Each structure stands twice: as structure tokens, then as C-alpha cells.
Image (cartoon, rainbow, N blue to C red):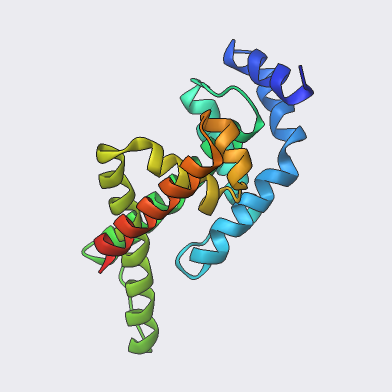
Length: 183
């Protein structure tokens, strides 16, 4: 049993020290995930890589219900948590912009228009993934593992217990669904 697997087992059994140690061991991997996630949505958030990893850690602690078996499962779950954090932040900003307590003054309307389009895209992608989850949850897992966690098809296949060809087909199905949903 690897160090990560044994830490996951201990963390599943409510060992908070194991969760701390797990984040220490996987910190570089989590920073890479956060960096990739923020690269796609950085103009829309005030988070940096470190802040996103730390916010993910806090969400893990608050949830307290870690049901992952190995490193690939954990990283896929972490990617989902990071996506959720970014989407929640953008939704909050959009709510504030549409009547929140803060007074927003835009000096350059082109910047404001381009930012809201990108923010809307993130929300649309998230909503499309939630809709896809009602149809086929495995397709969403494949998208999260490949796109958000940067896992290889082989790693995804091992994590889901399916063949590489199944992962390839699932990826194509998910891409087609998302393409149609976002048009």
C-alpha cells in the first residue's frame, strides 16, 4: 500500500492528521491542478493558485466525508472541488453585480462586457456538466479527470475500472454533449 493510499484510508476514518499529511504529500500536484483551473478562469476570480489549494483544503475539512480509494480518485475529486469553488465565486460576483450591496463603476465597458461573457461561459459549462451528470455521471467524471485534473486516459481507465477504449468513447460523447449544450 502506497503512502498516499494509506493516508487516504486514515483520512476516511476521520484522522485529521492524515488529511493534513495527505495535502502535504500531494501539495505540488494540487497546485498544478489549481494552476490549470485558474489559467482558464483567472480574469474572473481573485484567487491565485495557493488560495485555491487552501480553499480546497478547507472544503475537504468541512465536508469530512472523503470517499476516494487512491491518488487518481483523490485528484479527480480535488479537481471537482476546485471547479466548484471557482463556480461559486463567479456566481457570487454575478449576484453582486446584478443588485448586490456594492456599487460597481465601470470605466471601460469593453472590459466589463468581455468579463461577463467569460463568467457566463464558466457558469454555462458548469450547468452543462450538471445536466450531463443526470444523463451519465461517468461522462462527467471522465471530463473532470481529463480536463480539470489532467489525467491520462490510462489513469482514468484504471481509476474508473474500465478500458481505455471506453474512456476514449466517453470523452467523445461528453465533448459532443458539451458542444451542443454550449451552442
